[in-house]
Image (cartoon, rainbow, N blue to C red):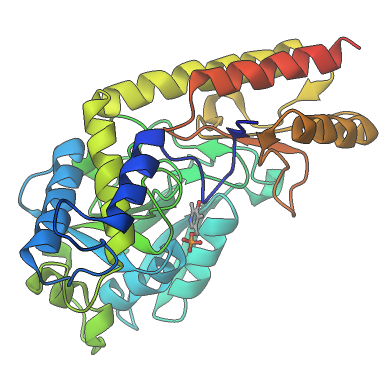
Length: 354
Ligand SMILES: *Cc1c(COP(=O)(O)O)cnc(C)c1O
């Protein structure tokens, strides 16, 4: 049976991307070699990574003051690499703590300099985005998590701040239109909205680099990666290729405008269903609800277990809430078709009526 894949990450990818990437494992672009066998400095792969880097810029409508890198490791690597490159020991960085990923990010930063948590929504179990904050004018940067994958909240307006803005966009990158030039640095692990695990995309405004005194190991130094055209050492070749295919798919499907339209349609349907069925409830402040990850509960926990069992039987994958949060989490990334949300909400209605 074909599954409805609501996994939170690694997560659903477009069928055409799976098809093309599997073909490339057998033979890449009539080279007589597998994508797994080609050298990363051959023209074949240089073309792949250059096209991927320029598609990122094109989709985000960024100019040449920005560089795009594909780096090893998950977003968790960036929790450390960002402050290592930007924050001197005696400087202060501001962080918004709206969920477990934001918490991890500021804790890592505190290993490199001073950290000021300027906003937190911990007081209400991270069920909203705390937008009421001030950033000290001498802060080196402000770090936010645009979408809180575990808790189910999302910034729907990007804060205006006078210091460089840095964002972990792991779970909502390329899901909506936005003025990306408001950010000085954006990073995301690929495995949620743009490909396979093992690679990060990093977009950085060059003028924020080179302002610290700490020596940085080459492999951690953004400037060294820029100089090397994102080919300082062997990149995760296959993961970069899958990212390229996904970026092409986004562009061919209508770009970020279409991703946004579709995610509004899908998430509106799901939240509307939750709000109209008394058995289900979503604790997230309405204005901060995530269009990528809906987190909600059933009043009766026995019923909830029964519902999750039914989901499993009906081929609905990945809908159990995060282990520390519980409840139900439905992830609706770019590649998830509307039909999957229709099938899921039909199941909710059927379950509620019996
Ligand atoms: C998944 C996720 C991470 C962690 O990503 P890894 O690639 O596993 O390190 C960090 N931030 C956010 C917002 C995430 O959704």
